[in-house]
Length: 483
Image 1 (cartoon, rainbow, N blue to C red):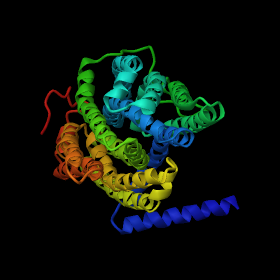
Image 2: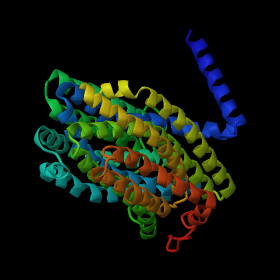
Image 3: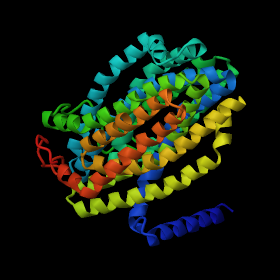
Image 4: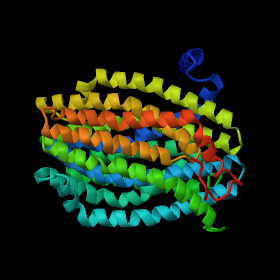
């Protein structure tokens, strides 16, 4: 029975691969490599993004709309800090993949060491600020009453886990940079399951409410960090999974030329991610002017889009790794072909996935809130989030390709234009015109659509290939950058 099922799945997979090849979406051989890297990262993305989503659903069931709104405020601060780690990890995977592809394992390992040092310097003040100033921060973006209390509690409890999350991001991207996305997938998926169990038990069983949800999340993130630390030091998990660029106490920890490269590549990524996180705060403030139900609806929409974004986790990291490794070995034409195929594949997947979410918008909304008016408002945001997920997914593969080349400044500028020149003004217009809440719908779509168009132009220009030459082994310390 099991063998017949496997054969059936294999036949379906082969048929889909053949159809994609014949349609000109992605070359058959490149599909295998892409999906080999992507599917574990997709699972990892769902595992990571499910933590906050599970907390939101359980708290919504147990405590209602006000508590959901409170968690929405807290998530904004958590996400802002996490975006810093994603930016740093993005610079890490760019340099690790190029050096690993150029057979410079020692240099790749040194990149990881310096990334960990920078991560420690960044996360310490963030954790302290969140723990000490949580209530003032939540109130600053519109939290009050029960929502203020819930948001403050959640932020205080989960803030210390950011130290583990920074490490987890760098470890996951290091594994991806050397072509191993399965090891972090297993660790992250295990952490997600642990989070579900702990959150359900602590909230629904032990009756600890928001405190229990935060504690379950913090403990599960820490557990993932401890598991990944084992492999990152070069030790295997039952014979496999040891990092080929291990971090140990021996050997150098600092190389100024490499440090400059890491900061140069990571800085635009961090800036872009921080800007994406910061724009959430005025959006929450706008939403709060329409009431807690709209705040909760906006957050549910953003959570749904984050889960859909898990596909981009896979395709983006596959693009970064495959493009970066080909560039590292001097194969620019092949690097372009890989990037183009991954972008096309992501477009197909996102159109199908977003259509499915739109069709199920009302049931999805009902999983988080139960008041009929709140369900209606939330369903509308779920639809807007699903529409915006299509350009999000396409842009993820484009920026993944650019990131693999070390070309991170252009995506930063593109993101700024989408966020602050289009999305935020659209939301603010809703406050002063009959557009109302519709301004938030426009903002959700525009913040992803505009960067996708601008980054697509950059990829087609091939200027990113010139940028990559300074970051390849023997390419210098990156003092000069191609336009």
